[in-house]
Length: 341
Image 1 (tube, one colour):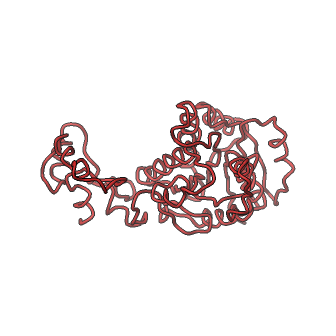
Image 2 (tube, rainbow, N blue to C red):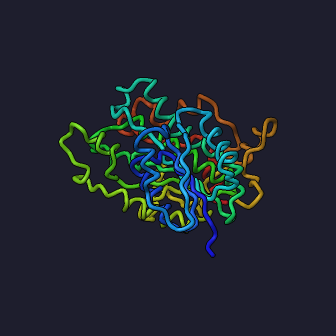
């Protein structure tokens, strides 16, 4: 008899979220929790019409990522009303893309709205579901977030020709990528990573293309089913080995930062924290009084920098007129030494 699996999917009433719910309900002995902003909407009610495999069930709960308390309230309802005692897989799919303009064309409110739903929302969801995930029956709890290639910094040049700048969307997803990669190193009990689902033929994609005389298919868009099938294949086999990575829907790994050269398996060469069960590396900076001594011992220069040092960097020199757009690591050789250890 196969072990039952409990899934929670946010943004579940349409697009990729609905695709996940439909596919997961086809698996025997599965409990699929569909989290939606408004359970009274027709698209939410229609989820109950999806076919279920033997021993599987659908639970629909209210969860609006823009409301901080909703994730906690949803978990309480799952515990008390549905007797849910564990979660095996959480898929943070809910997201918004309401302001497709350039960076300087967007209001502070628009930026904050996107960051709250797309970046902070998944963190609130993880906080609320942590205890249920730790109770996972298979011993390998997974928290996956749906991101986007638009949220990569290293791929910026490749995306400049995208029909819409979608600056709030891309920047908020870049923050999401950073947050979940950091969670991978901070929470050794959890398998967590982010997905680029592909350019998928959804309502959101259609809205971005609206008024640009383009069909998503013109840019190589794929179906919801193809995207979800590919992602589930990776999710099913996922372990800590791929934690902290940016996965493409087809199982390949994408860069998620600037000049990304290392996978999660060798991330210990270039990060403050290395992953060992129940331990934190001594490379993690100590607190308070010892912090200056720690960095001085790790820096090749054996010193702490000051504003004058930064002012002398070559791109600030009046003779420099060619180099720009370059990220310079200002750490006294800290990361260089870490990589060589």
